[in-house]
Length: 228
Image (tube, rainbow, N blue to C red; front, side):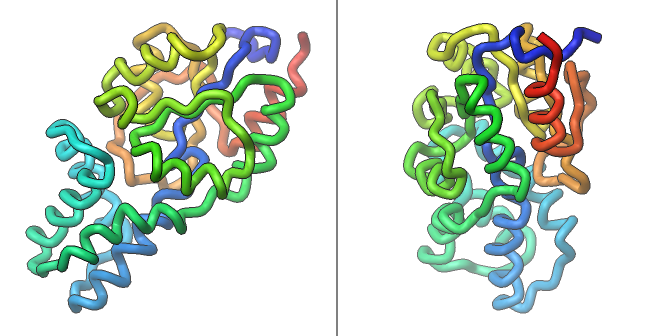
């Protein structure tokens, strides 16, 4: 395996949701109280697995990420037999304003930002990412969203657009093998998989990242302390 060295990269690109922002707690924090209000009782793992299967199917039909989350919630409603109103449907996307970073995200980003340019590649709308940017506190040199590109990861067009904007060489950091590690690897990028325990809001799939770390803090330690 290639040795991880800070001098090998100019830019670190990050997935946002699932890597920096704890989207699983965000998803459950909105959906489980809603399901309870309709007297629908399902366990957290089922909610996340249904989301993981449904979200990419809906994204394949296009549209804004706001509309994607609306249609995902409609799929939940059809499957579980309840009828959400318009405010409830719109509320799923709006709940992103209250999705918070993982505890390791901000300290790691602050350390990494002292050594690298930082960029986001995210399956989201610009205004929704703006909510998350406030929580993350760290300025990003580039933000590439699905709204800007007109498609969703794992489509390689997301990464191709990012490579046009950011300064190479690039190292991509993400939790989702399905959305990120596989397409980034196929484009020849080195990748870091953040292996967050129990993550199940993204489709499970085998991938071969260049490096694997349990936390963003571990990754920051490794690359910031690496020998030149």
